[in-house]
Amino acid sequence: MQSELIIGSAPQLSISISTNLTALAMLADALAGRRRGLPELWRRAVGARVGPLGHEAVRPLSAPGTTLAPDSLVPRSPAGGDVSVQAQITALQDLPPDALVKDLERTYGPGAPPPHWRAAADRPAHWLRGYASALADVWNATEPLWKRARPLLDREVERVGVTTVRGGPELLLGAISDRMVYGERGLVVSDVGGGTYELGDRRIVLVPMLAGRDALIIGLDDPDAIWIAYPVPGADSLWRRPVAPAVDELSALVGPVRADLLCALDQPMTMSMLATDMKIAPSGLTYHCDRLRAGRLITRERRGREVWIARTHRAEELLELFRR
Image 1 (cartoon, rainbow, N blue to C red):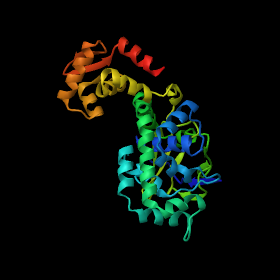
Image 2: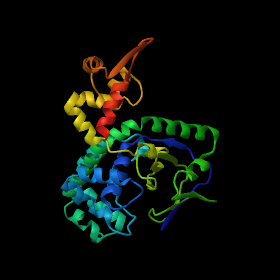
Image 3: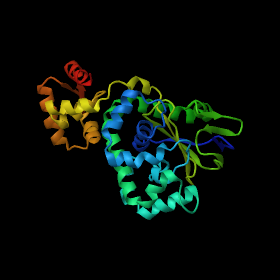
Image 4: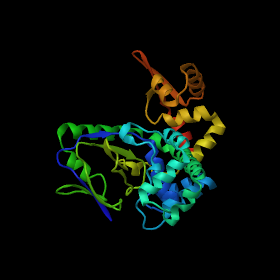
């Protein structure tokens, strides 16, 4: 089964850094059996982190031979801007249960939904809670990896920007995934829904994900934009031993805030960047940085008006120890 997106003229491209789709892609690969190249080590780590309620909610996604899914899986579209996992969870919590039932009717037609969705239709509030908890559990395992991927995401933003300015969107879109081909009329996508769609005057929003190399999630029905979520180039360099358990162990040694701070410093950052990234008051950040500096785990260097923070070699060795 395949879908075709007809593109009449050079499309307008934009990019969204939306973590909600990374969580969904990992959830589908690790728990729903939709294997798209996620390494087995990470598949086991994600599966172990999700609780029983989340496992139950994911079952409808694992039905063999199904490509359709209700829009409630992605209640917050990246077409409107960046969407965090927490924003997605909040949207699920705010979604009235009968909205899920109506969504299933729009997707599969009136009457009873397919067998794999009937339990969700019978207890929509229960399913929404379970799906929200599954996303939260997946993100708890994945967030440290996302922080390490910041340079890859920055590079992808630059690549999309250069492509947009230089006018080669068809080359970029045709190389995003092996499951997507740029043909004579536009994009042809395999294993996604089915049917023909017109881009019209809508833009295309690209959403880089941390996911298996064959992962692809597409939204074709948004009135303002088509969005395409795909694995960020270079993600293979990140698929090492899962770091979430290591962060827990490191937290026991240096404390949870300082453990998160060390993990965030994959590259040197200013104090203001760190405060924004970690959502911590500058006074509190200064206190924790003082303690880490006393332990020879970070350095501080003033450059003009900014103070830059970087991990020391000692900190790198400590992190590597807990990643083993």
